[in-house]
Length: 222
Image (cartoon, rainbow, N blue to C red):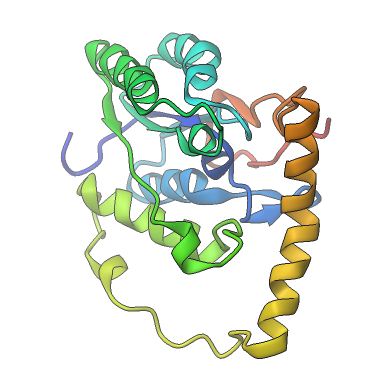
């Protein structure tokens, strides 16, 4: 559906699709999928959007928990991004993860949806402690997917080098920022791994039904 005449967009995935790193639990999470929905809605105000993503899920869990609800919503556009959490597990099996992803792609495509996915860069090369994508990163991902979908008004500007960040941290400030990130994200992640828990335990999708973009996009409180 080149040109972007989409009416029902459903996003499946984990923390990045949920929007972790773009917003917070008080104001709500935004993320690249929400941003993409907003870009689609500029020329398709009748768009209905659902986001089934939940942080911490493995690819198999995304398939088990989100595929059937996604199919029930009968999307004409779906995004599926999962597998990053699998890479962080000691027993990571690339073939198994690929199988889950391919099964989701096939089921959604067979029902008539256009399916888009993406791969994340080597975050370890960007930040020593692999902190989550910043809001600017989510905006670039949304722009990249919009360009791939040939949405009206999209272009390849997302590929251009970013201007220098006047707020970039260097020296001790950079070290301090990394340590704060470790305390906020890495420490709790390690504790959950030891306890055999996930950040997604007990959490529900923030937007499980197809709703107009004019409806607030927010994250439920546990």
